[in-house]
Length: 212
Image (cartoon, rainbow, N blue to C red; front, side, top):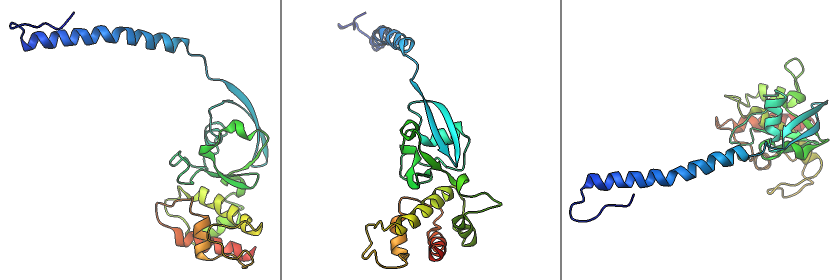
């Protein structure tokens, strides 16, 4: 149906013709979308073998599954939190081979054979890791949502300092202990605390670092 024209055309005629044209155009698009959906193959899967908190795990996963979702949804290790899901907040920080990563940015299939430590693997309520105990002592948390990532990152920070890895603000790696507020704030800058508990977090890290 075309658009009517001429001196006798009314606004109602024009709207009717516009609606009919739009509907006729949409039909093949809807049909194409339905056909395309029916033709879509199931997502590829892969078997991934990991060591998580000292325990061997074998998971069959959609190859698009992030390490974060594998931990939370498949292994039910929900201590690791999903915050921004874009690598900006650090709530999902875990240790892979002792190094901290944002698990939301890493696919599980990339970690075949890797050793992964989550907050549950660092310590349990009846046997806290020293960093966990220091966070409790210094009130290094409020709502607690960012705390697992903060603690995992803090443990890695002390290991990085021990191994002589500089940060952007390190003036002298020979300084011992390398635990100034500026140094630790820089190294922990990838972990956000929306409650603003930063000073207490620094105090907790300094205590543990000073005993190392």
